[in-house]
Image (cartoon, rainbow, N blue to C red; front, side):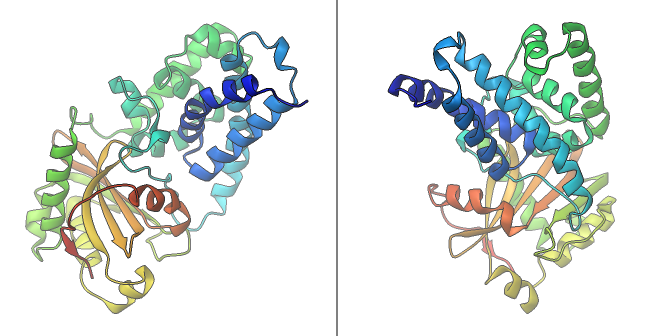
Amino acid sequence: MSLTVVDVDRFEASRGRLQALAYRLLGSVGEAEDVVQETFLRWQAADTGRIEVPEAWLTKVLTNLCLNELTSARARRETYVGQWLPEPLLGGDPMLGPADTAEQRESVSYAVLTLMERLTPNERAVYVLREAFDYPHREIAEILDLTEAASQQIYHRAKKHVADGRARKARGEIDEAAARQLVEEFLAAATSGETSSLIRLLTDDATSVGDGGGKIPARATPFSGAVAVAKFLWGLFRPAQVKRDYAGGRPEMYAWTANGEPAAVAVVDGRVVGVMCLEVTAEGIVAVRNQINPDKLTRATERWAALDPGKPLFQAF
């Protein structure tokens, strides 16, 4: 069926919300955009005149498409080279979606998106719909063809899994200025040549993990412990031609935010070549997650071109 202008406008009014929902569910911009496009095609083929609540219909279609994608994604993860991390979104990206409440902001944090990989597809869907979009369990049950009681049980189970996966409670709200100051301090310590200054910023059980996707060298297992992480980071920023070859030059380092967390962004000739997200607790930095897979940095590069980051802190390598 051909869509009317009104039908197209209805879909476009929901596109931003659908993209934000799909990204939270899938952790991938490309996959999120694909399911949003598939949702549009199904909207185009539907008898829209008989759809009383377009938003509910579109949410149900998109969520179930994401559930199918999550099921197949689990199989792909088994053959993924090295550690898998979500695709980062730089501060201000509209795909980050709603950020009015602490729960909404946390649900799209890099830390929580990584932990949600442990959830079943249904657990992830219920958790995101409830935490990020504040859907009542009655509506979640209708979207996922569950009972309301089942939705509540799945939500509590998913929330517990996420809470258990966080080593410590995240630090309170960090505004952009504080986040950048923390990143500047972190980078200064990481490049000082003295691991002791960096160790003081890390928790005793800090971890560091990188995702190169088989395209850029990254350790297959995370580094654990403040001393091991500090030594790794010191070595990471130590000059070496091979690093410049992989990056395509000497990266300029900036302090920014990604997914609401403090982040160090590495840029070569306008191209983002790395985003290092810092998970911060009251005790210090508990996790350093470094996305260097070029396939997962396209959106970040596009977003970077629209920003005014100012002067870089320094050039790495």
